Image 1: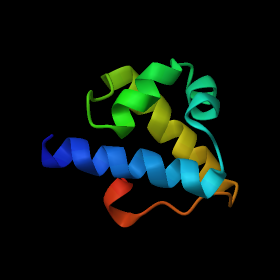
Image 2 (image 1 turned 90 degrees about the horizontal axis):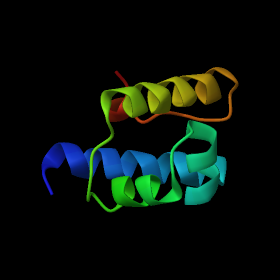
Image 3 (image 1 turned 60 degrees about the vertical axis):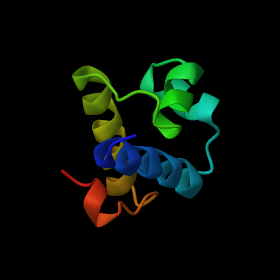
Length: 76
């Protein structure tokens, strides 16, 4: 697993922890499968550009609502 994949896996786990979401709950909110979120967290795959955009938009929305504090390296 490369550094980028590790960082993204850690970010997904942290987002779920802060929002108290299961992998299935996060998948439902992003419009992807549970298996996709599971593979992201285990570093087995990286999100497509569209999925990453959806993930980033979700994180920004949760952050703007005060429900999430994004780690510095997860921004951008």
